[in-house]
Image (cartoon, rainbow, N blue to C red; front, side, top):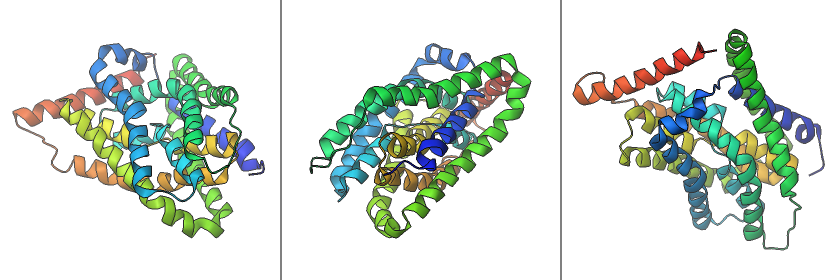
Length: 314
């Protein structure tokens, strides 16, 4: 794919803005929570970094995509967990917001290093038909650090020094992030409109299965390990909602491959619907009274209170 304004400027800037918005909501306590609540954090991070790629490989075995580029694009998506959208959906699903933000913060520090390595391995394994695409791992790591870690750190600094301004800017920046994401998807749809029916038939079903399966597995793992109700919802969303913007940026800007961006674009549209349904279902029979229900609702309330108090810190 020839370099365009979309790939060279819009995609990196969009991801920078998205991660800046996430940084505006971060404080040091989000990282301390690794030690304070190790069980939930370890389960969440483990599911995101290990369970997701395993599920992705299983889905590729089941669906057998014709295009190796689409297969790599789908795997790339599994290497990009979490993000600002998962934080928003956790809030709407009445999950543990503090845990969601902490998981996103930790994973965002790790994925700039894991994404290039895992993507390189996927390309070697899946593109065995003679197709070759140069993938400079070192350059990719530096690029991801520049558009993932750097803006998050800038956002945290702004939050620490100018808390009132950060709180006012947080919502507009997140709204701008959503607009950016939909704008990118719209641009990709227009650019690939001739092949769009084929792409939807080919990658739509596996993208849907990936989304629903990982969301359900994340929830079940959290439930099996006896995390509270709010944490179960959070880990289900964090595992099931991927960072489509990062996947699109890596595929479109760093790899320069339009086809590899399609799974993330299709997935990003699907996840808004399935994430909303998941949040509705998980709260359908949410207890409001009773000994067992009181304990779990109280846990969520304390999480929201902690989050609210944290907004006034610094």
